[in-house]
Image (cartoon, rainbow, N blue to C red):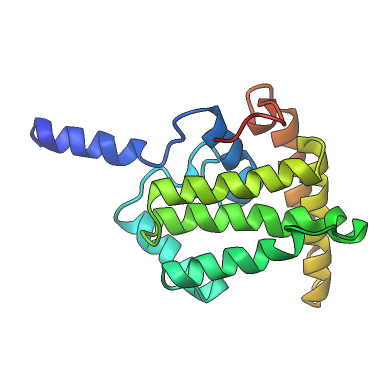
Length: 194
């Protein structure tokens, strides 16, 4: 492999790596999913690459699990997940488990980026909007992760499956990520997202 080939390989590996703390903050909102899906939470959608099998895998998951197969469907699903929390007062019970939807919305944007449905700039801009909404509804990483877990448990229950082992695994991942000295929750909660 020549110099240009090595450069291209290095460039491909770095494209999914956040460039600054604000981008790392966004990745932290769905780090628990990245780790659960056996990815690396340090990268967008837990993926160290954007091309080849990684991009194809994201497209398969988006189509299979979310019925998303293009940019329009992606943005429509993100809007569906976030709309009830925007522009009006939410009921406390919606906020108590709402991070489940909000974290999945930023996750979907990351997946859409890795899958090639949305470019990096738009993914970041849309993620920052959702991150600012999260900051307005929750007081800390701990609040966000607790709400995410509550929403996840409610979702598992609604599926007719108590999923106790999966719930226990998510709880363990959230605890690990919240307590890691250099983990996603080590960033200031009220970090300016722009």
